[in-house]
Image (tube, rainbow, N blue to C red; front, side):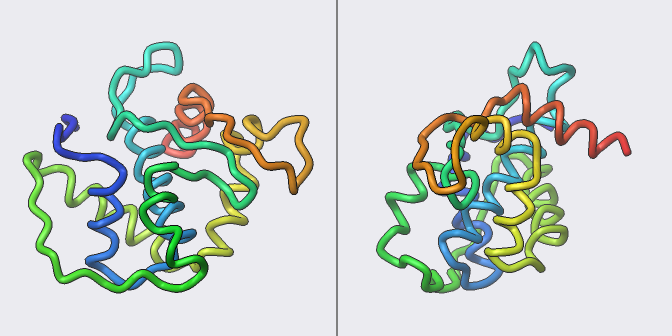
Length: 157
């Protein structure tokens, strides 16, 4: 899959908001799973991660992976749902929309708390939070190498 140069975390979030109204926490997790699966499926190994969906790196916050740009954009909603968007999304790369649709099909059925629970049991978030208590605030980035190793292992099951 070739990277679509126009994509950032906000564009991915906007795409998922065309599917349904979503809480900021659920939206964060959907964008995180998109980011992570893209790394796993579009790189050869954990030592040469050159293909990213977008450049922003998720951080290991208390409630799971977070992209700061999305947090800033949607924090006014707190725990309330962000309204569904009627925007028509057009991508340069024809492979991107089916990729996002697959993420939606797999993860969209879960609520925000279920997605949080899932990320808390996955290697990338756990490794980034190593040595911290459950309530410690953190802005530590989640390792792209850990993301590749974990999600690539799932892809090969």
